[in-house]
Image (cartoon, rainbow, N blue to C red; front, side, top):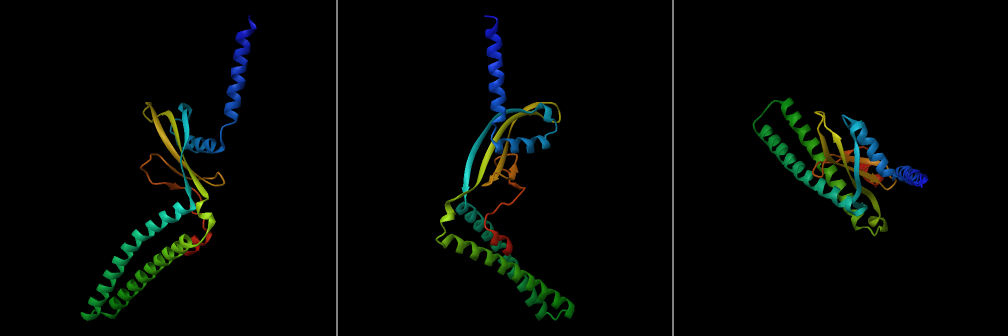
Length: 197
């Protein structure tokens, strides 16, 4: 009977060591990154690690199109205002230097607008192609819930979000659901996309 508590304790320790050793690689990478950022890493206590959602290449392309379309509106407005300024400068007989500078501004604004338009056209072509890879999962987002002491020594429960690509490489993190992602690695899965930016 004296051996029973020892056997129970030993089996618990074996189970505990196995459960820690079998931690998913994405969880381990998330915790490693978080521990580097914490002010008091020794106070870290794991609560949970959950998959929040998965992103397909289709989702990423649609997000990028939305981003560049909103940026394109700004670039179009900027182009129109620089063209308006150039017309004003020419009609008001400003010095040659000012006219040349205004022409240069219009050229730069036009180049930026055309570049943004080219990226959107490229992404739309990717969407409209019969690419069977559009539904492949290219990123997974996770939420790590933990407790740790803040710089004032108060123990708080917090969430930390991580994004991994299809190769389980940590590519982005954020502290809250509403924050923007802080990019750490390759975000977008179409190599030609970067040639156009």
